[in-house]
Image 1 (tube, one colour):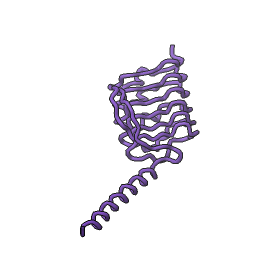
Image 2: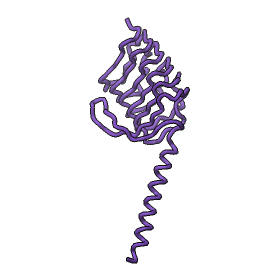
Image 3: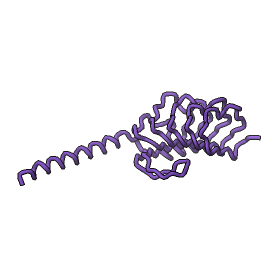
Image 4: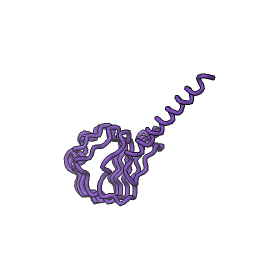
Length: 177
């Protein structure tokens, strides 16, 4: 019975620590975005739960300035993002990036971003007109690339150099001849 107050103090301490960590994690979540664990299927149809930052349909002009360090999936669909900035510090464990339905006209800057864990990139329904040489070479483990419904008319012969793990490439509904 003498240990009862000690047990209560230990349990209370653990509860407070857990609460502080949860609040701290939410503090890293970009304003207006939702940060939570969500189900996700890898390109090889393996089910997993992934730390997801959902910034879809917020009218954003730029990438969020700060992301939680454990972000695995970043959803930026249906915004007004026109370019990928050099200064973006993507989380090292990012496996999925959805930039569909934005105003991107170039993927050149995505090459300077080293994202070795990235498996899926969604660039559908943007304003991409060309894929230059080695424009995606920094994405060495990429397995899925969705570039359909753009304005692509030119793909350089070396555009996909370095994408040795690519399983799916979607190019339909472009201006390719």
